[in-house]
Length: 364
Image (spheres, rainbow, N blue to C red):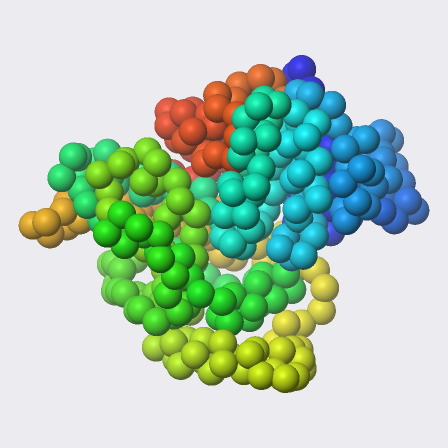
């Protein structure tokens, strides 16, 4: 490798998964965080790693961590609150950048504010490079290639097998709660638009059954049209809990209104606190009980043209492994295109497909 890998947020749940995924690859990252005692203890437990102290809210302290060619990974969210200084530091330093966000608004902000800086400095920036939303980008690309030039629309559905509700982290539950109050981005007739989350429900075939899913945001709406300019419509759906898909629409409408009134946000937080649960997430045994399943349906003017199903490890194992794989590629100089880019632009289709296959995300 030609660059170091710095892992900000290594003491958190997702950060720990990324750390151990890197260690399994024989890579010794530099854990970083603002709690010196916690970061030092983690570094010692991991075999005496070099560690660093830095504050995610302070661009200068993050910039001091990295040099051109290094890779900065951050799992410190919510990213719309804590993410920008870290991403800015990487772009200014000419370091590569990966994060675990599921917040599409944050990705769009990075594209608007940092793409030019990152490209000029040779920084490859990969926001949302985990379960959110690499599987959908890969599935959508496979469906578009299979369907051919006649493809005009791609719908992506995210599903899981096994008892997922008990296997969600506090961070995921919080993101789901906050997400229903925000609009979801869609690509419609070639234009990026925003619609109320869960305002649309679509059924997808999953393991021989039709399962409902509701409209959510996803970076597929940003990245797929860049690869396939003739694709006019891209929508992303979540079907983790199909029986709740119809109810999610009225709920999103209510919460969106509630957040606009005084104390509405605090009321929602208080009412949902028992559902959010304690910090952390599912242990290894619980993660093994669930698998991720992603569907992409490509459609033309005459109807469906292709349908692709990918299945892989649990949403958390998949995120850890995807980030570790991308970091290894970037640190070794395998990245292709500087700027705030998507997985295909960063590595190429064949390389992404093969990398996903190596970690168990494959067509079924």
